[in-house]
Amino acid sequence: MTTLGWILSACLLGGVLSVAAAAAVALRADPSRVPMLISYAVGALLGAVFLEILPHAFDSVTSARSLGATILAGILVFFLLEKLVLWRHQHAPQWGETGRNELAHGHEHDHGRSGMMIMIGDTVHNFVDGVLIAAAFMADVQLGIVTALAIIAHEIPSEVGDFVILLHSGYSQRQALAVNLVSSLAMLAGGLLGYTALLAVQGWIPSLLGFVAASMIYVAVADLIPGLHRRPELRATAQQVLLIGLGIATIYTVRALTGHAH
Image 1 (tube, rainbow, N blue to C red):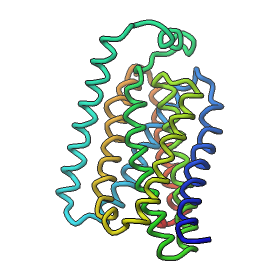
Image 2: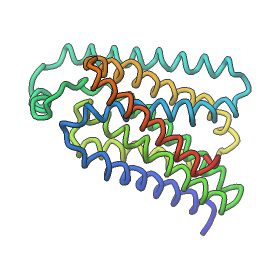
Image 3: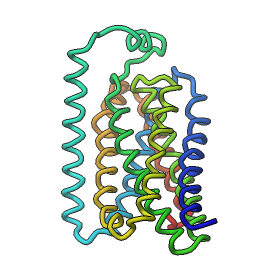
């Protein structure tokens, strides 16, 4: 198989496998337990940001100040995006499938805001993963295979969190699966562009990772954590802390098992 064939196969298979594995976990969850699983999603998001994405970005950036500015700008961009979605929602009909879905699931959702933003960040992240896979295969086929497997392993807990956020955001299970599959195709685009213009694309990686980190931080801190504060009782708080810790531990464990291939 040619190098390009390896890259495209690994990116396509990697995107589909990570989404399928995450769906197998997240879509079996009882809809009434989705609010509880939001705590796990918070931990997975923050763990991915602070244990994986930002360390990788800072290792490859020439100016830490410029990366910090990118993250700050990204947070402001997602703040404006959420404002646009809120404005659109205020001018849209207030009842229909959305309202019925809320009653059926027994909890409130955010009318797609956090789901839309997390998918923007995830699409960029998948693109960067595709570039990394291309770079690894262009260096050595065996390194490419190891890198692709490591990326799939890293993606699964993050994708589980994404599914939970999409369900919390009002998406149906079928919609959540479709959106994640479409987002995973960005890995294929990243692999193809990485193969054809690797040197140019590699220069973008720190900034792209900063943007990905901004999306995850914003969704976790601005959209998900405030919802957890609606249950201040001690038992609920202890459960939330435990699940947040479990989300972080999942990212840490996968990172430890796969080494530094990502």
